[in-house]
Image: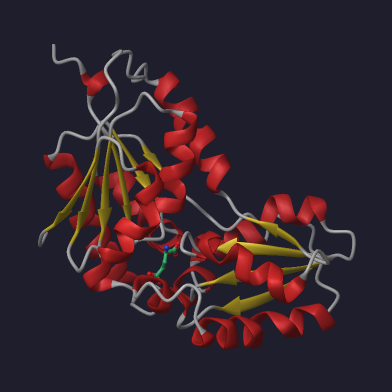
Length: 265
Ligand code: DGL
């Protein structure tokens, strides 16, 4: 029997944002090999139809399975909320998904008002609605579609006047609406935390799901006895179907044993 334990964890996102999840996974599970797929040519997913998101998610998963991945992390809220059910039906492999952390926010809020910054595809999905119905219904949800943010991040314009203006237009109203928790419902957005802090100061708690996804990955590896027990240094491959400059910039500090591959898939 093939020893699957040394096989890589597959991770995909519509673009470079899922590297925020890759970092959490790599920190918690430094022994694991990983293969990351950035479908930047097709980003953003958030404005696409549910069927288009499902088709791209199937294509991304098929690519990762050809590379012998033992488990797939869907490091994209939009792909998870629109496609993970179909992926689980279609492929016989464990999947971990990511959803906006509205449940933790609902437990933390003191003002009973939370902000959720996410894509249109996530906020309009049936899975998001289902999760939203499980939280205390007296909590007011201020949902904001972060149109344009993913494009700017993909272009490497994290610190730019366009980014500041866009973030201010989305977030400043929350300060007047008594919001005390802001959920970042897109894996690109943790890269904007310093810029968001500039706008909200410490009046609002910023909540994302990255650490929870890494913990869940660890638990599922243990459940299926898939933990890598090799003593070799782990290897990491990043595939991207567009210019790799932003990807390299975001992952830079972790460069050892990391390869960036620009290719079509
Ligand atoms: N990182 C993706 C997410 O978490 C970005 C979505 C997009 O491409 O619009 O939803």
